[in-house]
Image (cartoon, rainbow, N blue to C red; front, side, top):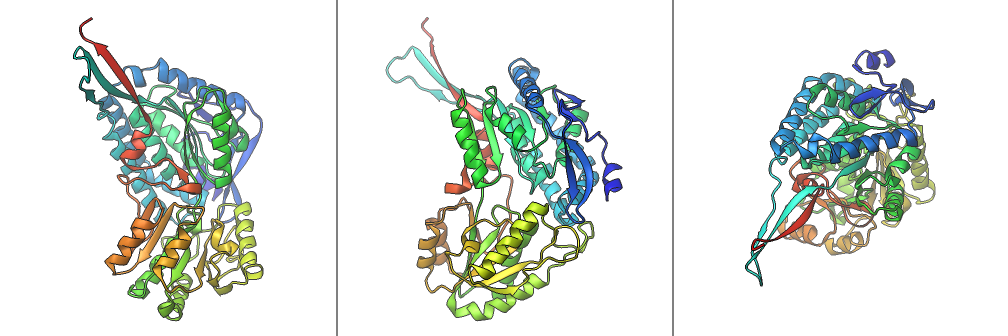
Amino acid sequence: MSSSVMTKLPFDEKLIYINGKWSASSSTQTCNVENPDTAEIIAVVPECTAEDLDQAVQAAYTAFHDGPWVNEYSGAQRRDAMLALADAIEEHRRNIELIESINTGKPISDVRGELDDTIDLFRHFAGYADKVEGRHIAAQTNSTLEGYTTKVPVGVVGFINAFNYPICLLAWKVAPALAAGCTIVFKPGPQTPLTTQYFAYLVDQTGKFPPGVFNVVLGGVGVGQALVDHDLIDKIGFTGSVATGKHVIRSTASTRNVRATSVELGGKSPGVVMPDADLEKTAKLAVSGCMSNTGMNCNALTRLWVHRSIYDEFLPLLKAAAEAITLDTPQLETTEMGPLIDRRQYERVLEYIRIGKEEDKASVLTGGEPTLGRGYWIQPTLFYNVSPKARVATEEIFGPVLSVLEPFDSLDEVIEIERKSEFGLAAGIFSRNHQDIAKFTRKLRSGTIWVNTFNPLYSYLPFGGFRNSGFGRELGYESFDGYLVSKAIIDDISY
């Protein structure tokens, strides 16, 4: 697949995009980019240095404080630039889809949906760019004082992205920040940089974005830490693990200039199957809720509660749904699930499967083994009769592993247990009883709760969590507003 990717890249992947130009990194260190289907190296990209990062931040800082993006462009001009970028993504989408599928191992049909979402996000948030509004505050004690608020962009934003949804999560972050008038330094996950570089190429090709508005640095922990620590960064947006997220929060609090932080972290999302659920339909939804993106999904349904009265009837339906998933070359139209992203994640998931079998004493309903004899493929895996306190039921695995917990008798007992979870990103309930649905959605501390479905997200609805699942919101107006800061202006009109 190596030659297939390279012939589709209209830019030199060995360069980085800073201040409106493609240039070489100051480092001679490089990072191999793999195709997880085969473990073949498909590209070699630079491992950026703190010097590269400083150049990117300085470019974004200058673009924000002295450039036209903030100081001359109207909201309507930023809107039009974003619409032009959405059009460019749409024009190049076939190339982007192929590259994303090869670099991530995602089924091509899934990637198409993600490109639909990416294009929609830029068009959606473009609509906010010319609608930044303040308030007039009537005088309270002095009639000659006029008070009003105005909203201004937060400034230079540093983004650290995860590997699991490279282009789609880029859109989640970049689209609202651009609409608000921010400038950006963006670091993709080191495993999946190619579509971020492609996006930078399209930013450049539109001719609508002044130099320094969008910059890309590549690499791992070192350049990420330099981004978090840089004194000219005004806000950090991070998606990744709980441990790294906590480190980011501590780092931003200990720098010379405290800055805003938004972190979207892990999850261990529960699903509850009530006795009145449509069992066959729910089994398929539950399995897809876990196995989507090979389980490398922060909101994946990984803890499944099934009522005692339907437990034995439901398990065979789950097993059949999992075993019906087609695993094959990701670029084939019939493929429904791909490989894990790299060897580290592959070995991590296999270790958790071992823990489930040996330490947690959970029973395997299906799967649990490597498959296809190449790359980083693991079968969809279902455990059952799992203790709610088992490691496979409480720790985020980030792979195709679903724990069906011990049967429950009362929805109240489920709610009581789940309210004590360290996570609070997402949850779901399958039921026709509106009283049960209302109780579950009201009492559970989860940022997103699905009812009789699992996983669909929309650009106009906020997404984020509680507790160790992070804080701040992606998507929706809440995301856009997170890149704005209110100023209060008080004017004595009698002067």
